Structures are given as structure tokens and as C-alpha cells.
Length: 346
Length: 254
Image (cartoon, rainbow over all chains, first blue to last red; front, side, top):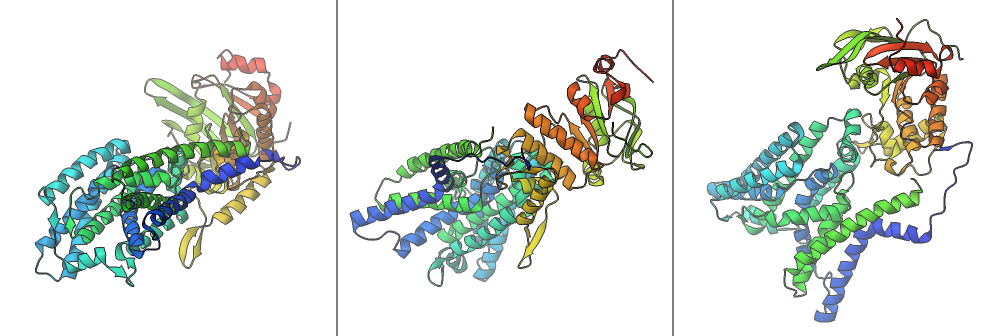
């Protein structure tokens, strides 16, 4: 505690530490630029053409990133509050097959109407496991890892039951245009929709009491309770948000492939978790941003699409993404140490 | 000894009892607290100090008896309501959100909003500026206000917890072992802070195990022993030996 009488003596921070601190804070941006440069350079040296200068490539990367991002948006809130949601993969699948089944059951309706009803049903059903998650974790104080692991199994079973164990294909021009159309012939519609939802989530997290309380709970739940935060309500709401974004991911899937699959979101779950951590969230809660999650989703999407583009066996993407997650965690830890040493605090 | 106006108590506890299962945590406790007074609560572990302050702050409801603030009963209010009346408790673990900055910590639960294009957003700038003023008021200056408070020292964190109470116009400040987790120079600063608050008419109840601290800052000492009142003395009228004897249950007055 520096008092007014004694001028605070600021210890000089060594340049080396300053650079390290900057690197650990901005590493995900730098890493994004690095892999973009890497694939661009590879593309020129092997195929003698541009990678990111090609509109199709950019659109494909953004569509892949959108799939990851949609599931990761809600998850960002949950991880900041020091929880986890393992059920989002099959919540996405549940929404995807429900939407497909509803559209299939209404062949005589106008495609726009059956599409709207399909979306409503898909999102509506996705919110049910979200509510149960919220109730288990917020009210009954079940640890989120266990509660959502249970709901992972339950939603998985229901998704396959509703789908009848198979992929449910649909013929609906509006759904197809929604999943594959482009705004101004350039921006894929799912990307545009996801961008709007992302902005709303950024607003919620960074600029509202709700977002602030999410951080406060992740930092120290006792202090949040003592400050009068209704932690039960916040916990319930973030699991509903998470179910909503997972449901949206399922809707995008059904639109994009004109089919709903129960396991539509299953392979994306771990990528979504990875995206949140790469974006700067910490497993112990209390940190993370929507912008970080967007960067994390882009990094994984570029790795996925880029490795296929340069002709590597697709299994390399698992290895690469796995390594990136480990790097992210190591950097998160060193960032904390650096902050302490540069503050000069005990 | 400073002169304290003892005509009207700010806070009075009257014949309060509390039982947890087979343990009588408080039995028929009564005490008065006057504006600008520092009252030390002393007693061995398990003597009922924490139970007493938790009943005042609304965490526990007394089984019998009454707690009054400015003449009005507060025995059955929630911690939130009690805090809004101006009775603020600073817990041992400080109850700061470690990952958030000073401004947010002072305003947590009572955030200031502004409107940007009609949309309500948190006014972080206002909260940060106000927190600078609140800390300055207590004679504290921090280098980096954007830092999460976990990177600050124990004394700085204690100061933030106290400034939060003062900023929200606390009239009664309850402090649970405010110096326990601190180094010697920081203990010094917290004790200076207590005296400064006292000068502004804030009444302070503080729990401490440290008799030196008690004799240094408090006006009156209230000793508990196994849930009962073992004794109450003006600090000028007693000695460390007598206080220790009361804590051991040897001298029981009233």
C-alpha cells in the first residue's frame, strides 16, 4: 500500500519481461497470423497460387469456424464461470434431427413455413436439456462436469431415438439456401448469422451485469454471493445460453447438409472447448473473452481446412489441435507468473 | 482517550441467544456500539465471536433476543438488507473477486450503468475513477488500476475491501481478523486506517486474537467465553492480564 506521503517507487520492468508479457497476452493473435502465413507460403511454394486470396477457401474456413464458434460461444460463459458443459455436442445433434424430422413431417407446407417450424422445434427442444443442466447445477449443486456428462448420455440417446437411428435427410429449398446461400454472393448466410449472435454475446459478456457476474462467479463465488449476486439465476441462464448456441449449431448443420444427424455436434465438442482455451480462458474460471473464442475457432478451422488443403492425412488435425491446446495452457500459466513478477507484488 | 458520545447507541444487541444443535453458540449477549467507537471482540477459538457478528450481519438469525440499528430492529433481515442499511462486514478472506479490477470490486453488486446508443452498458470508466477517489480518501494510491486485484498485496486488498465499505457509506464496519493475514508494515497501515475511519464517525467492531492490536486501536473490549459474555471494559480500565483471565473464563462480571 503506497501512501500519499511516500511517492510510490515503481520498480523498472526489464524489457525482456515486457516483451514476454506482450507475447503471452497477444499470442493467439500472433499464432493466427503465423498459421495463416504458413499455409499461404505452403500454397505458393507447392501449388504456386494463393490460399487466402481465394474466396472459396476463405468461405470454407469461415463456415468451419462458424460450426465451432456457435458451440463455443455459450461454452465461453460456462468456462468463465468455472464450469463445463459436455452435453452441447449432442444438444446440437438433438436440434439438428428434430428440425429435420419436423420439416420431413410437413411436406405440404410452404418451405419457408416448415423451415421456421423446424427451427422453432429444434431450438425449443435444445433448451430442454439446457434447463435440466441449469436445474441440476444451479439448484441441486451438482458439479457441472458430472451433471452435463449425464445429460451428454441422455441427449445422445434421445437424438438417436428421434432420428430413428439414422440420418434424416430433408428437401427444403429455404433450409438449403439458409445453409448454403451467400449474402451479396460473398458472405455465407451461417457466417453472417453467427456474426450477429457473436456480437450479442460479446455485448452480454463485456458490457452487462450478467457478464460481469459470470466473471465474478468464476473468480470467487463466495465474493459474488456476498456482493448480492444471484448465482443460481446466473448459472441457470448460462446453461440455457449454452444450449441455445449448441441448438443453433445443429440448425446450421441441418441447413448446410440438408440432413439432420444425431452426432452432428459430437466431433465439434472438443474443438469448441479447445477454441475457448486457446482464446485465453482459464480452466479455473474467471477469464476469457468472446474475441478470444472467435480467434480460437478461427485457428482450429484454419488448421483443419489447411491440413486437408496441403494434402496431409486428416488425422494430423487431431495431433495439431491437441498440441495447440497444450501450448495454450502453458502460455496461460506463464502469463500468470509474468503478471506477478511484473507487478512486483508478493 | 477520545471522547465518544454515549447518549444514543448506533447498534444494540439485546439478550441474543443462538444454538447450533447441541452447542450454545451465544447465550443472552448484550452490547451497545456508539458512533465513532472501536469495539474489540475478544475470546478464544469457539467463544462465539463469529456467531455474534454473523447474527449482526444477517447471516444467522438469533433464536431469541433482538438486534437494533438506530433504534430499529434488524434481527430478521437478510445479509443484503443489513448491508444496505449501512452495516458492512469485511471477512477474513476479504471477499474480493480476484480476477476483476479495483473499480469493479468496489462496485460489485451495485454497478453503475450508462447508455450508449440507448443500450445499457457498464460504466467501467466511472467506476474506476470513483474507486480512485475512494482509495485516495483513505490515503491509498495504486499504480495500476486495471490489474486484477489478485496481483495486489494483502494490505492493498484489505484497503480495497475497506474502501468499498466506506464508499457505500457504511456506518458500522465489522472486521473479522483484519490484520491476521498481513505482514507487520501492512498491519500498521490497516490500524491507521481504522483510526482514520473512527475519526469520521464510523463505528467499528473488530475481532482479533492479537491483544497488542486490541489495546492499540480499540476504545472498548468485549470478551466472550463459550458463548457467554465474560466481561466488558473500557480499554483504559483494563490490562492484558485481566483480558486473558476473562478469555479463560476466570473473571465473570455481571
